[in-house]
Amino acid sequence: MLSEPRSGRLAAWGNALLAGLVSPDDAVLAIVGEDAVHRVEGLPGESAPVGLTLALGRLRTLGVTGLRVALPAPGHPLGLSGPPEFNARALEAEEAVVCHGAAFGLVPEVYEAGPEGDVHVEVVWHVLPVRQAPPADVPSLGEAERELAEALGEATEVLSKLDVAGSGPVAEAAIDAYRARAERGREVLAPGYPPRAVRVLELAQRVGLLVSLAYGNGHGGAVSSAEMRARTEALRPVERTSRRAQVAAYNAYVEERERGAR
Image (cartoon, rainbow, N blue to C red; front, side, top):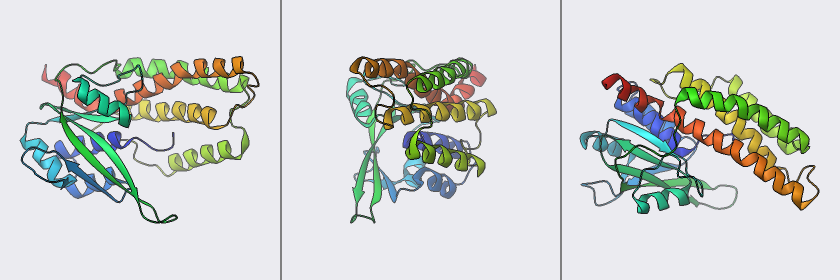
């Protein structure tokens, strides 16, 4: 897992913008990342897609005070609260942003354009109604950190047994890329997030990287169908833990604001 989900960037930097901690230009630059452009479609009061700066400002005037992340997978509606139509779109995209303070959600649709070798990515965020209810299966930061510590050990053990951990040039290149990004001191989360959220997200990304390496290195040492099934069954809860922790980290800004308001 070498890059964060687009919903994570939108939520983190959108929260920093809503809090007045970054400028609109800096927020949009961070959200777009290496993509060509992001637009928002279906925003109340707008008949056509608009840019991120206008969209985030409009959401603020509509009552949005924070942004949460959802990273659902089949059988695991992580971070979602309904209705079914929104959940289905989010599940198809494997991610979404859910607004706090107003009943809206945003689901990305990704387009690739341009000739081979010069492809650029455009993203359209679709604004849809959501149910204002507690998000599904999101742990606290403390719970996520404890789960991750166990999952990291489990992932390392499973991959070692299956002879896929750190094996081959693809795995080595992925690990080297992760380390290089960490050494550059990349900003894991936007300003305003607690240090614990940064720590949890970094660890979740490390666990996710190990899982993605396992799935991306063929069958490794698993030479029978039974062993391949065993690997999948062993890695599934580890991957689930990584996603839960990511959501907990991205949502920490809103959770802290809610605790402070009580």
